[in-house]
Image (cartoon, rainbow over the protein chains, first blue to last red):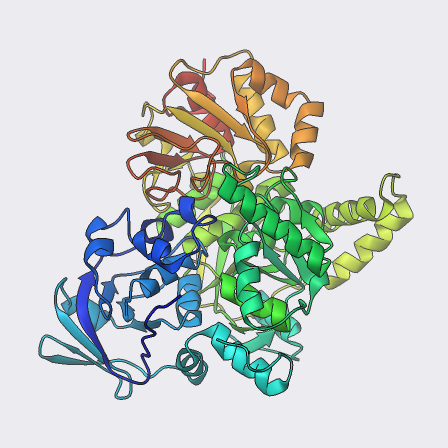
Length: 183
Length: 438
């Protein structure tokens, strides 16, 4: 699990845009046939977007940003549809809208998900995009695009790096879990 | 101002006097569902540093998604699940062969009207058929629930779908769903609670009602809801009394006592509840409908697709693998044979469906027609095993999802339809209206 943890809260993220369309479903993001056998982050990342864009798993770099249309991630509740991108190093997903389970899974994995129809309208594959969470701004090809601030609960889960670390912290504070456990 | 079903159900689950759409509540589900993904959830759970599940009595676990194990790796996964079930003393565990989680938990009557079930499975919307609030969650959320018994949920806004009139001859709940999803789109119900009402739904047999909330996952819904009525109470009461009685036959008094508890648990929206939209569907105008690859909202009248060549016909899944589905298919294929070059795969949704299907002769009829009968479970629905497709093949399926690559092969095509349409098409080898079979 030696993945570099990208902290979307602490520093502005910047990377190359991978632009996709409307209605990309979880089977296109991570095929169902792998869901009960692959567990290693590297293995999971290797199949990211396999049936949608084979170039992605080969060429995506840590820090890159996925930009998509409506209803990104509809379909299955499989969390690998989020973790395959996270393990690949994707820093954020910006979409016109997200499917509801996908949105929860993303936040719970500590992956920044933003809804910005304006950024989606403008972004093209290969563009450089930077996201400044502190100022709620997306920088894209010379433009500044504003997005609404995150809700406090989502902010605190993202800050912890996801729901599991967030919960570990809560359990530690309440004395429910043994302390000193490595996260 | 009245409350919707979703507002009432989530207020109850959160122990609040009331809740309104948009509010975030800490809800305590009555049941938490997981399946073959239980081992992965257990891994996340252990990483929290906890030894014991906080709510072992509220877990329900089935092995159904790749069951029996198609490979040594899948078998290892199942073995981990069984060890976890043993270690944690999970009572509601259903091993390989019992059937698909949504069907089995319905048959076991583990969820009552008005209750909250959260499942690490996107089709947990299913439990709306009995008037419960069912919603899908991710693996990490399931682990968090095992740890604390609660999870934050946003109370959804609600869409009211009013179904007027009567469905035409041979037109089913599946056609209604595909038609509705075609009209509103794959995100037409995004984040919404979808409440149904109307006489056509009230008159449906329970097995048909189950199709509707199950399919609403494909509309993007958080949950869906049908008004629980006397047939629902009676059915659940009988299932619970049977379970309590074990091998003996439950007496009427026991069933009546169960019925009263179940009915008392039901929740109904207020007449003046606030909806974001009301959508009216004229049941009589719905035709036999087929969803085209690779999206459920690419729905078309069957008449436009008549004659499309298929290689595989698949009857099964949590959407349409019940006894009435086997009956509908058996009636179509009786005295006929599956067309050369076509396979008909039949996978009952549960061992109870399998046993009843045998007893009533439906499986015999299907076998005589040349069908292949599989083990109760999800089968090839998400491409694990038991009938995955080759490149270029076309499958007509009774499942709820037809995404590209879903059945294991990105260069195959999946069409979705009702059981009778799937059976008729297996006999002719092309997409066929069962009412037109000579």
